[in-house]
Image 1 (cartoon, rainbow, N blue to C red):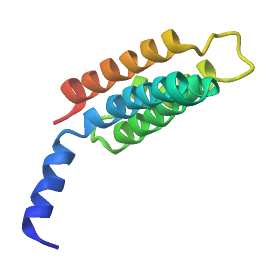
Image 2: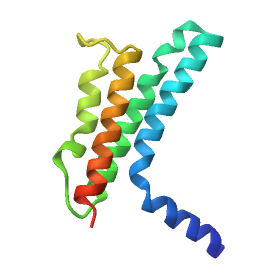
Image 3: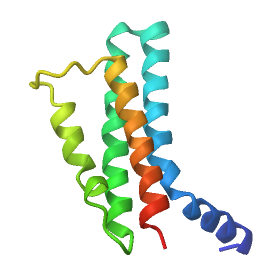
Length: 115
């Protein structure tokens, strides 16, 4: 592989804590675009972005040298909150609040538990 590609990949890995919030917020934006312009049933596709972001955050926390229990349990929170049979509303407000929480937890993981 070319050395410039390796350097770009290393730069991305330095900021790997940004990947889960980007996935969560981009899923919400894609859901809003599809819901507004194409099909109203796609408003809840932002749930998938938040769900995937939670599992990415859990994986990043698992690969860190110091373990963070809050970040490791983030996929469990996603399963509980975005469960279709739960009493929580999974609308746009819940998706944005959950994506903001993923951002705060990933920032916390980077600043406190990264060497």
